[in-house]
Image 1 (cartoon, rainbow, N blue to C red):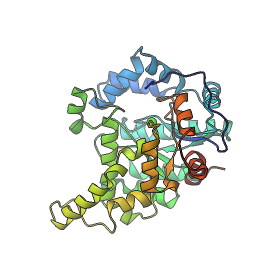
Image 2: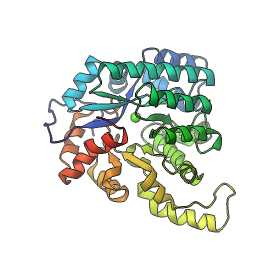
Image 3: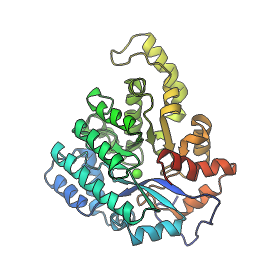
Length: 354
Ligand code: CA
């Protein structure tokens, strides 16, 4: 499978808009800040593995990413037109501000959100923004969610899995969920590399990044949110998971069985009874996107499990910028209504577009 070859073939105009929901950008100074974190030796092994590679590798794919991730105008719009993407839902690239100290994270989240809001104002029919927040300071994160919703026109929130080894399942972060629920802002729980306690065996095998470590850590992050009882406390809260739900839909039966058995055995203090089964929360409090997975079988399974209204399209530009994948997805053997829900109407509803 090609990673970043742009084929000359262009997707045909279809009877739906294509809204890509997990598309990355980086403000011009972010890479310098990441270089400084790397130079200071302050980053964890995962960040160092990921960003030392993307910031310096001469391979074609990292070069393509470096060249285009900062563009929020001509080049990006040309790529969108070429691929038939009508709208990108944009978010600050992983791990966003979550690698910084708390004060830097709070202030840079504001800076990045202002920068993104300005790009959305320049191209209001092509871009939709998700607000970055700093979980390092949950009260400030909650304020930034309010500012994003009420002043910047943001349509959701981006959080990258853990924050320096701490997961949102810890109640100290729950101001973020309270604000997201209050302002009706979905949280896109995007991957980052596994934290230090987890990453060593992944790194030994080269599996710490998007190939596998991202999904394992982010699936864990989502599952911890479920088992901690977050959705019993915030029943209207909605999360979005990329990469076909980080494999959780596929595991739902076993999650339900073993959660029930573990709670019944009173095995862990941390695993309390929930009002519903883990699979119920997956179906009622999560959306999934197919970012990085242009694979009809997986998409159809997710639609069957979650419901057609809970599965959305994402390209993962510029990390996985492959025109052939758009054509593959256009050609899915799927009822027109369901395909339109996948590409267009679910995203319009979830992110209040149009
Ligand atoms: Ca991504």
